[in-house]
Length: 303
Image 1 (cartoon, rainbow, N blue to C red):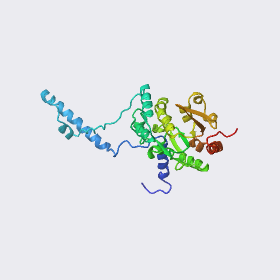
Image 2 (image 1 turned 180 degrees about the horizontal axis):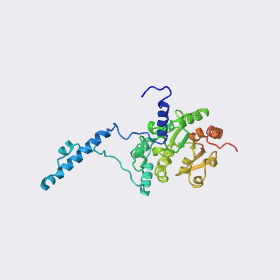
Image 3 (image 1 turned 30 degrees about the vertical axis):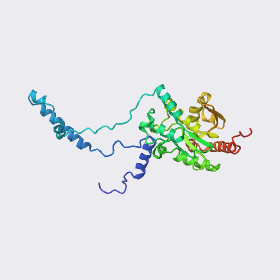
Image 4 (image 1 turned 135 degrees about the vertical axis):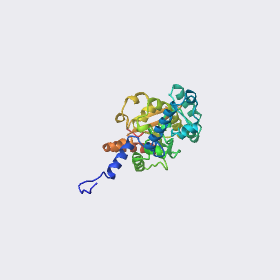
């Protein structure tokens, strides 16, 4: 092409924007470990077709003779790669939910619970996720924060809230004197990233619910902060299912697990705050309320 000062080819910005769009849409894996030569595949397919046509010209007795695998491959037929054995997708049933309940109740420690969740194959989300995202933080903490499900960054790291929303959450915790390294514990209702960051289905929530309830029992926190409406709806049920986060946030709730009752306070999810910065002051108010509650030994602040 002749040099033309008015001509400019697409730059790296366009490519970067395309990759960012792919990541936002959940396209974060390649289809194969190595590039495929489609021209070579076409040539092999043509050779195989010519071989079959030649065989049809043979006498009937010869045509019926099965072609050895080595001869078939030598004529250019593409070899089928071996299929790796592994778990397959299953239709979840009430029995799957019951299996999760039994497994969760059998866990006596957090390590046992984590091992059971990692070995559990009843949730199909596990088939598409890179990692099981169990939790992060200090298990001895009196403050536990529960989100909905891992995102792309969390799936890669195997830890909850490590992306942009996680960085905001860390700053919010630090502002009230808490951190995941010292005195806060963070988990999600769902342990595997839904493809494309879609909302978990009701069945997927029902399967994971016994595990997060048992996790809360074992942590035994003084206060649970629900990050967004979805974890509040998934764990509280009842009237909470019908309400949005604007009605739920800042309202004290009771979460009953067996014979235990835990105080919970819903607030906005950090990802929502990134999209709606004007709501940060309301979330800040919720975190200050939580701080006072914890400093008062679990006593509700005066209204």
